[in-house]
Amino acid sequence: MRKKWIGAVILSVVLLCLGGCAFSSPEELYAVPKAAEDYRNLQEQIDKVRSAGAEYAGPLFGTNTQPVQLMDLDEDGVQEAIAFFRATSAEDPDPLKIYIYHQTADGTYEVWNIIEGDAPAINSISYEDLDGKTGPSGHMDKELVVSWRLSDKIYRLEAFSITGPEVETLLPAVSYTDYVLWDMDKDNQKEIVMITLNTVDSVYQADYYDYQSGQMMLRSSAPLSGKITGLASNTKPLASYLYNNGIAEPAIFVTSNLITGIITDIFTWQKDKLVNITLNPSTGMSDDTFRLNTSISIQDINNDGYPEVPRPTALPTPDAVSSLDFWQVEWMQYDLKGNPTVVSTTYYNGEDGWYLAMPERWQGQVALSRLDNTSSGERGVLFYPYSAEPSEGNATPRPFLSIYKLTGPNRKTRANAEGRFVLLEEDDVIYAAEFHTDSGWDCGVDQEGLKALFHLI
Ligand SMILES: [Ca+2]
Ligand SMILES: [Ca+2]
Ligand SMILES: [Ca+2]
Image (cartoon, rainbow, N blue to C red; front, side, top):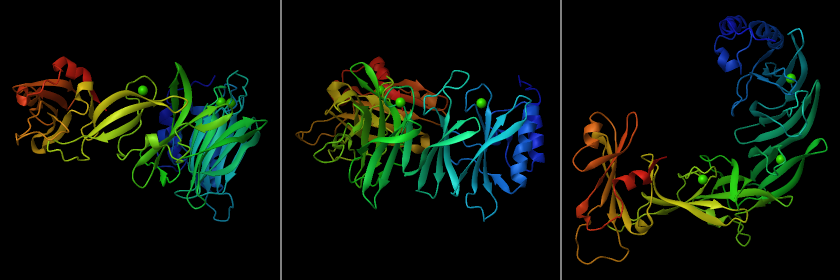
């Protein structure tokens, strides 16, 4: 077979520069290093397209952004080459071209097909099995899912099946806001779930496209929460699982902005329908997942493989002025009916990159404040005993615990200063803590206990 690796990379550099592409390294242009002869054969074909008036135009986002990608689309054991170009002529009505090359038995490449698009750029490309068909190798062959980028906010999704020199359109271009490929119905093929937010026509929904008799068919739709203003910019739609009676159920978590905060809709496939399991039918909103704090993301906080949705509540400060600086977070797991369970409660310090699992007896009983000394590389959080009832007299509250993030020189000395002990040490950061016995409150946790409660984000 074609396994002449030696010298391939060096030769590639030379050939690429000869090809007139002095700006990009071969790693940027090619998905996988290739044997020298194969590379030359492919480059010959690519040069033909370029010299006829085209430039490289790889997808802008996603995991596959090189302008030349190698992928065994038909699963016959030989990789196809997929090359992305933009015609330089302004006359071309379909300037974007996706060339699909097949490697023949003698090692040369021939054009199998060309997919063309009328858009300024390709947003992303994915190779996934959508139709459940297998290639000669017995593995599932791969379909092409292309996102055409019409503008900053307008994308169209199109899916193609490549069976030898034949290209079939499985999904004609559909406008969308975001999409996820995920096996929602557990038949080992991925479906397309498209999220559409159209504030002009008030369309806020998720659409489920599944393969049926040669097409990706729209089989079911479910509403997102009403009143959303857009998808959250720091949390992409997440394809994962719910834990339901001991079984992992596929689910998609979509987090969106509201004027006052964020909200998460969770979609599952149940009884041949796409269901927004968190949606409260009487309000049209996933009220239970609403949160003011937009900076704490969905994550698998307890490392059990299932993501949890954060439910943050502001913690008080010692002078009882509720601030929005300190957050206690209940981490919620949802079952298929949309019923939540709290799997963990933490004080979450996103700024300093750590969180502390909150012992039950602390909940509702502690207040927090900061003591930062940035010039010496010290960021501290102080924990105080707290009662919602106003206390008698004006005694200054004393903290029962301090947790420090220490950086800079002599951090080791500071971590081991009188009363302090190390919680966790990294390359250039030490997390340390100190119990203060004069607070008058027994927090019920010792050094080892605190180390067990302390985690990095
Ligand atoms: Ca192939
Ligand atoms: Ca499926
Ligand atoms: Ca989890």
